[in-house]
Image (cartoon, rainbow, N blue to C red; front, side, top):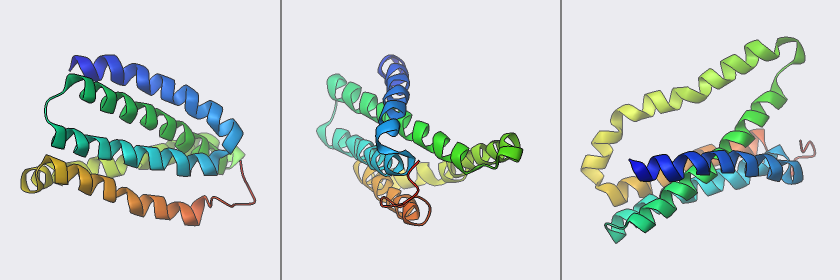
Length: 151
């Protein structure tokens, strides 16, 4: 609990700030790709942690990296949502988009206990890393790396 609170909170804040700065250089679309990849890699860190066994320092590093990349990814996603809203309806559209952002968390959380129990922690986190691939592939449709419309 203390590791998550200490490293997680500050890493998320720092990740959001770093994400904002990097987005200015890379643009929103490329940032979605880079930060999404970092988030997937951070999930793989938990698989590595499961393989290693008990280590507070490794846990701290994985938690810090996961929250850092999460802050960066959230910054890019929020900027992306803001960029696709119509100025006349920004508040309504942004509210709907941010609500939709939570749907997968609600729907996917129910079976996670089943998967963790049946796969084991290491395989569960490998599975979680792999299920990031469909989301990354969606970026090909909505936020191409080579898009002419870099924001």
